[in-house]
Length: 119
Image 1 (cartoon, rainbow, N blue to C red):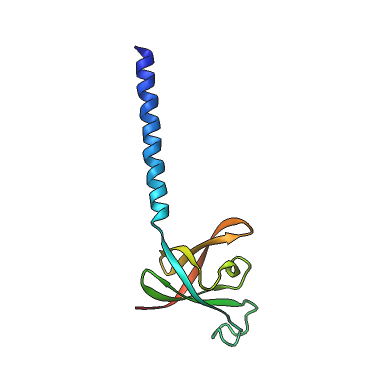
Image 2: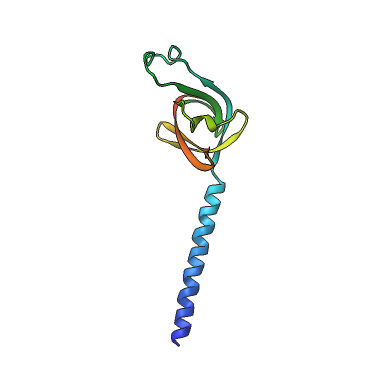
């Protein structure tokens, strides 16, 4: 009798884990993608009010969920891993577009500030 109860509990836990795993897998496959159309390194003069800054920015244009986005992020190693003409998993988070890529062989998610959205 105890063995039957244990087997039922173990089977229930395994089925629950399978259901959870399959839901996680389906949501990761349903992510929207950002298609990179162009990437431009800005000079301090092009950046506007931040002309005296030591920081450099990358401006990128691409499509996401049927709209054209212009986004920017600081010019750094992890932002330069994106390539023109490729698609990357992405998600909207408030006023940022979080784009997933690989940096030094590891997955990385970078926030890009949204500058403009066009239909």
